[in-house]
Amino acid sequence: MSALARLRTLSETMVAESPVFIIGAPRSGTSLLYRILQGHSDFRPRTLNLEETAIFQQLWRLPFFGDRVPSSLFRYMLEDEDSYSAFLATIRPLRALATLLLIPNVLLRHRAGWWWRHVNRSDLVLRAYFYFAKRARGCNLIVEKTPENWRFIDGLLGAFPRCRMLYLCRHPVEQFASYRRRAKDDADAGWAALSVGDFCVDYLRSTQTVLRAQQSRRAPLLLVHYEELTSNTEEAFHRICDFLGVPFEPEALRGSNPERIRWPADPHLFGDVRRQTKVWQELVSPLEAVEIEERLTRVMGALGYQSLIA
Image 1 (cartoon, helix red, strand yellow):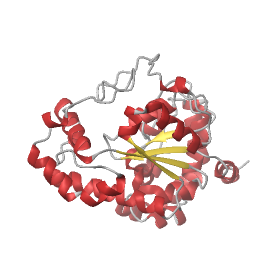
Image 2 (cartoon, one colour):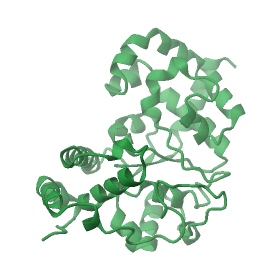
Image 3 (tube, one colour):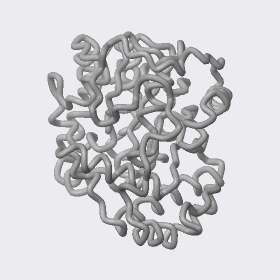
Image 4 (tube, one colour):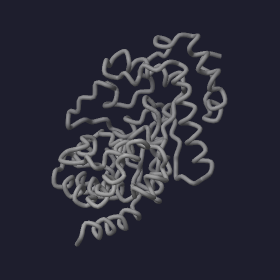
């Protein structure tokens, strides 16, 4: 079978699949939910793996894909070299196409979704990748977490019409405090050192994008509040399982770590789910909290959040 015929066959198979994509801003609980879902029998990989593929940000690099490259895609496949090599062989025609389109692709990067879907045929790349990732991970259903994929809702739906998306939201003051703590504790997390203004712009943009998609009903998307997940965990997980069409398995909530994964970015990721892991007042000044709430009043109301400083 030719590579093109193989690609078409895999694409037809994956269109019928229902992968789950966890999206949401950083520090909103996406890693916690990712860990929990991988404890469920339908999503459990051969070994627990918290890798984010960032696959949409990788598409412009398609001509440069190779042995173990990009590393995030290889690691998500549990470093299965046979599966990754099969993926690369299957997308060979698309890599040739991307080479011809290299200059406009570099200029556009991950903008202009229509260009990637209809000219670069990115839907086929995504379907091939997750076909082999599912085989490598040895799971019944795929779950993947890249928080920034709220920007690519249309791309996810185009590739996987039957997918499900889980959007994690968090009170903005608490979330900003979590950014602060990450920047304080991790010298390599420069992305977390946001100003109040930049944080509010990002929070507003991501939330409005997701709410529009949910309200239009064009996206099978469930809004999950971090506060609900951490304070009423079983009920929240029951609701998530119902949305995903899988049985509720309370044992998935046990925070075991048999692989002994070191996750210094979040020391509370494993073990029992904790309702509170910090005091926001120790990381955010009263004036900053007031500014955040004033700038985000409307979207806070849409999410059901009340002021923490009133």
